[in-house]
Image (cartoon, rainbow, N blue to C red; front, side, top):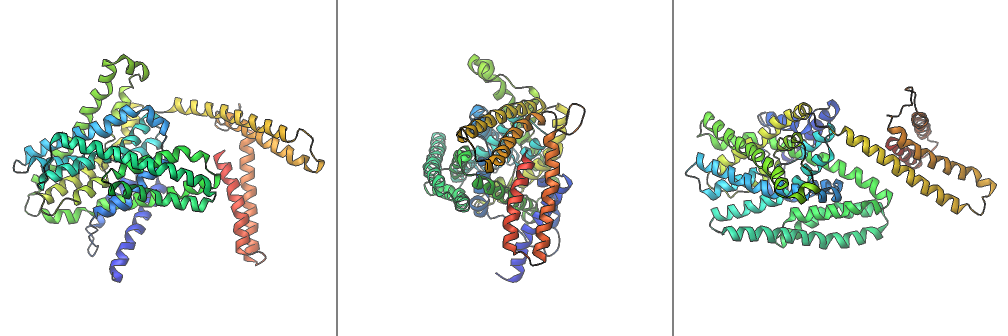
Length: 528
């Protein structure tokens, strides 16, 4: 690798992170800005053609992104919406594949139907990263966010399996409909089995390591190990990674506090960097893809792209409405257990079908001899970019116009948190009284009093949060005053530590050790 190539490879993550950081600072939709900047940069003279390597995307980018999302997800909430997630991640993907496949076959009669279905499988699975980011920022109900996250966790497995079957049919490895169903079921079951086979011993090992750095190092390796193990056994690596992530995430509260603190920070950084690079790569694909389409007219290409995009969007809407309401109309049991959601929530979910880099990775993985490969690459790219830009830019407005919010849910969460904080604090005080029942050394009386005060203050903080941190006449609550004053005190302590370090009165190592204690305390203040 020469110096120029190395420099260009370095510029990709540096530039992507810079754009993503700018978007965060200005409160702009990062994925959309990254795609636009990447598209523009692809035409700058001298910029290398960053062609997506499907193996790198599927082996390096996809496992940690899926794993991070699964760690943050709630197994219990996903279990509550499992029917909706299954209808989207399996039913909708297959329905979209068929609809898009027939539309493409109608547009290009000379293209084999199996090749058209391959494009349908490529374009079918939405990537909910951008949609979920907007949904959380605008305060969508938890159920909607859980459905979107669950769909994005599992739909890639369906799409990639269907894609492999379709490509196999095109290149001569024909397979029947029953054979395709059997392959999908076998791949999915294998992914679940591999996931649990890894998750159970991993949890056992992690509980006994008792070293946050080692534990998080193991967790960094886990998604790659889970994906590769499943793929080597011809099972779904996607499902394997998701199962491991959900299982470990569900049991993470039983880990040590140091493990959780490091894990949260590490995975936030990894996700931020990988997502920035991925969305920048999407935009950078435009120029190399267009170079293979010089023989086709611009209006012809626009017509094809509009038809495929329209098929992808309409198939999602057409599937969502009956799949949401029909089961409840036909089954009283479903209706009683899970009442029909407001139509506004269904509309929001139907508009959240943004595609992502997995679609492009699958498209680039098509064999070089695949029929109309350049055109199919172009149609994949335009579908991804159109859904990101059109839906990404309008998604916040759709949410506001439909009036979908989680205000009531937020209030109920704060109420439940306050009750839980009070119950936990009461248990802590009871334990403190048990430990000091035989009396306390007068020297330690202040320590016990301080512990009692801290516990009581935490019990009050959650109740105060219901009022936004203000009292009945708008004044600051005692906890709010405590946090404000303590932050100022902590900053003064840091200033002194830095000054003593600069004066060579303490070593850097001493300063960092004391600073870490102050940082942990401020972290608890931020949480409070």
